[in-house]
Image (tube, rainbow, N blue to C red; front, side, top):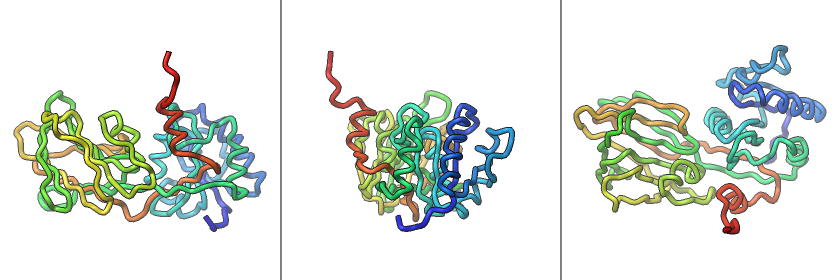
Length: 293
């Protein structure tokens, strides 16, 4: 990344006051580096007195050169969707549990971020998904997703029925709990727990993972990220279904709705300390190679 960093946006875990002490320490460190700091509005609410100018999430991306997210993977997912159109690189500080994306530990935060600011880092470009819901020939909802777009059953334990198409070609019809359309980033999230494959982050691919299909031969498939995935909710009486985006936003579906998922025009750039290994992360987070006792 050749862009000179002058203004840093700081984003804390939503409505979690335990993050405040870490943000205070981070703010002092960044000011010591002669950097301007902006908070998003929800982060600013964590403090009784203004610690830095605050901006709405909708506009902050246009004013910052770098984003630092202090929280967990869920916080980073939320921020990344909003900042993607501005192509702002993101550093993640982990206060959560898994930390696939937020890979800097809070105790070593200033040391690791200092090295990155000094140019000792590696970048990773991640694919973002873009979804549209069409109802009666009209687009009624759009959303981005970093991990996955999931079509799933409603609150009742009933199967839903849907058809899947790729670039307009019919693939199959399914009765089950739903289907996950996952990016490589999302392949280690809900898709993994549903039996899907792990995709390397550098792959330009999308995984389609059925959730509890009634036909057991209905298996996950991986397709090019250039494909347009279409999921048609078939007209079954009293069917309840909805679509979720990264498990953080939802939209109710009706019979004959069509959910289109494709690769978004812009992706997400993550900045990591040098030497980060994706497979080391998998070994640690998924406990690969742990000695059996």
